[in-house]
Image (cartoon, rainbow, N blue to C red; front, side):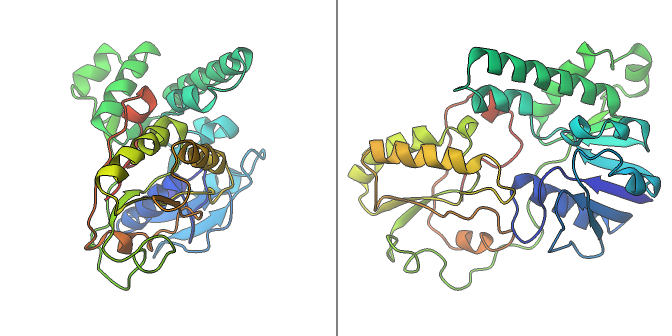
Amino acid sequence: MNLLIISHDVIGSRMAGPGIRYWELARVLARAHRVTLLAPQPIDAPPPGVRCGAFAIGSFGALKPWLADADAVLANGAVLQFHSELAAGPPLLLDLYDPTALEHLELFRDETPVRRTEQHANDVALLQAQLRAGNAFICATERQRDLYIGALMAVGRLTPSLTDADPTLRALIDVVPFGLPEVAAQHGAPALRGVLPGIAEGELLILWTGGLWDWMDPQTLIAAMPSVVAALPQTRLVFLAGRHPGNIGADAHAGRSARAGRRSGLAGQPYLFLRRLGALRAPRRFFARIRSAGIIAPARAGKRLCGGALALS
């Protein structure tokens, strides 16, 4: 089968969560299918055995030559916002692992009420279009799947004949977790302790390994750090986050988190931002043989239903 995988985010040597997800999906699916992987920018580190390409997102007709060669399409749901022609093409499997309608409730919190209302209406309309267009769907967790089953019922996709043929609805929507590579991380040369300024040998590290998005609530963790440092002075909080490889909003969120750190009296030693987000392989060596702590932030709705890993190893 000729499978076309379409990402709305950058893929390559530096990428964020969506890019990592589609890079890995392409790599695994290429074992059984002829896979083409598309992203909005050229892919400088292609998965083995995968044909790669780039398309101008939002440009009419940009996907036409790629769709012509495809027997099926796996696309991030956000792509449908810019390319409605997907709904009329080959069988369409939409990935809804990123619940943007919920995330945007936090992302646009500081906007005017009119702007927030407009954005929310657009997000709901896009979700409804996605649920009507897809032949089938995947998401990242069982909790997400419950959310989307309710949404599919609301738009009329659950019918008596469908549930008779597929009582579990797994053929309509199933879970594909974010996952981990099959090969375990191997300890190599030191990457943090004794290497980066402010992190000495023997210190206890708390790692935040994802983007500093508001719905992840990094500010609560930062606010707690003075109490942690008072009890364990050797503790350092490290954010493996910063500017998004596709130059979207994570850098502004990082700035807000840095300001929260200064307000908590943490400027300097107890915490550190690594400003480049998204090298695919390198961060794994941070986690081998590392003394670590896991972090559970307050349960905002967007975070409870997000598909990527929130924490830290």
